[in-house]
Picture 1 (tube, rainbow, N blue to C red):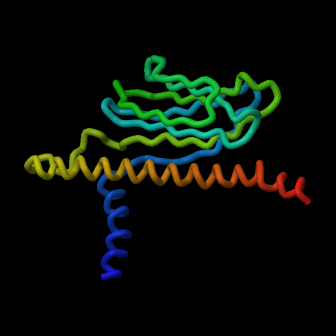
Picture 2 (picture 1 turned 135 degrees about the vertical axis):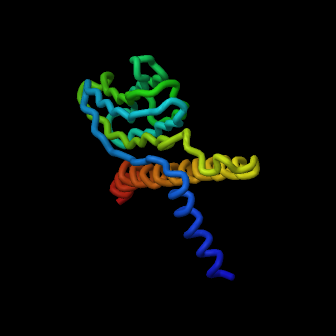
Picture 3 (picture 1 turned 60 degrees about the vertical axis):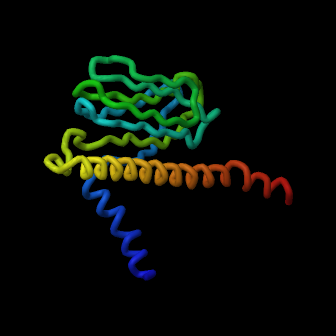
Length: 178
């Protein structure tokens, strides 16, 4: 019985990843003082995109973030934020721009951890000619996949934040208590 549970735990995520691929990578970047770094992601109409970010190091741990559509249409903007998450459905095909700006800082660069996740092909359906039950099952699996990805990203952020907290507070506190 225990072997079957472990097989289910190991096989289900792999099966979900193969059936419903999501493009997800996390990157660390350093944005210099008065600097700006932009990244582009190609989107198809109706695709789902999610930006997750967290300032890990530098200054007051604040950064400005701009998300722009294919025709330079502003989609979303943050000013002096430490972390955030923005999910949206693309309204047209083209290149979407994600910019991180450190214009407010005069001396200190900021280190940012971010990921841009997108549904690879929103128009493909695994069960196109099947009855409604299969379509509902597919939607439920996609929602579960997205929820698992969010939990995984939250765990990664918590691990990074914990490490940052250790560097920032625990070590200096030990030195002052000696």
